Length: 537
Image (cartoon, rainbow, N blue to C red; front, side):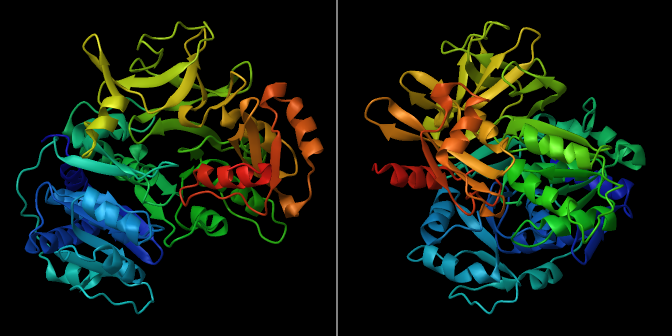
């Protein structure tokens, strides 16, 4: 057996058939039930001509259907493609064309968008609809999801698979159209799925995955709060399932902090994964309620991935949940799992620092490793098991996947430095670095300073064009109860945390700070707001 995710999942279903695998609303499947349903759906896809190497879009909210569809496609060596459920017709058309989709599984309410996106193009061979209470119809032939499931054989009579089979995740990003990151199953298993052993040594053989799953000591129960249209939730889901653990999903479109906390007790959640402050703050609000209490005694870990959890909110969560390990995990769709923030240790300026293995370093402009303790800033890089590149995008692949002295690296675009003891300190996303009068300002640092104000809920920091300095620092923020906070008050607060040139010169208060469904920042929105306030184009 090779390290193929469908193979590994089938081995766990055989080893632990009656073990709970998936909980989503009223749906509770064992590993055997999940495997059988995926078999049925896989056979239906095959009956529509979908096979090895073909791509099928998932235009879905969170729910059991997402996991079943991904697994069904892997069984026939096809590839699931995530489509952001907020996309409108031109964006969906881009996905149909760029990802070469031969099928789509979609919420019924998205059928009109798909019709508009597919206008003038060949009909989609397999268009499957998940009922959502709406009555939307399509001009194309559609099949109800459960009807497709019932039509397929429950038998597991598929051909041989390979560790070279692809798993593609389209990155949402904050600007531009998404790009499809191509992972081989085997590389993804070790670099992004923690080698079948979260927080432990990776397995040494495929057979060890099922063997470990039999031992409940290795099992975890995880609830990823992010939408499955983003890589963080998909990877968390398979990290959980590949231990023989139970994956819990809060079904639907939106993150509901109250429901998430209720599920911790109902489904015995041990690990909660969130996306930075955008999810941490609503959880904090719920935990601080006086009219309702939550039983979180099962919870042992809260991990933030996809966005840094600020020191302020991390400390507040820790105070309310003293027995829970709260960590910042670091990684990206292109790099996989890189490491986690050092406990109780911070760099000189308070940024999160990460312990990472020998495959991770920081490279200078000449692709040479930064000398530890030198204070130089470079680009975070990883070598070893990496994605093949971006689907149908040779230019971006050449830019992000680089080689020197026979070693291949991925450089996702994060700036960092290396401390004297080898810890890596994250500085910020290079694409959003603000150059003001020759000085570099990383938005994350200023955002952290702003959010340390007791009245601030959230903040985004962007560059604003300036005739004298090239760019100046702008901030868009929100406060508790929309309490007014003047520019002078905010600037005075920031000066106690960051250097003067990093203090925002353009300040805009809004009822809410816009973020994507994943919890990641919508910097394009913040830039437009800040520019309008500054009176610049």
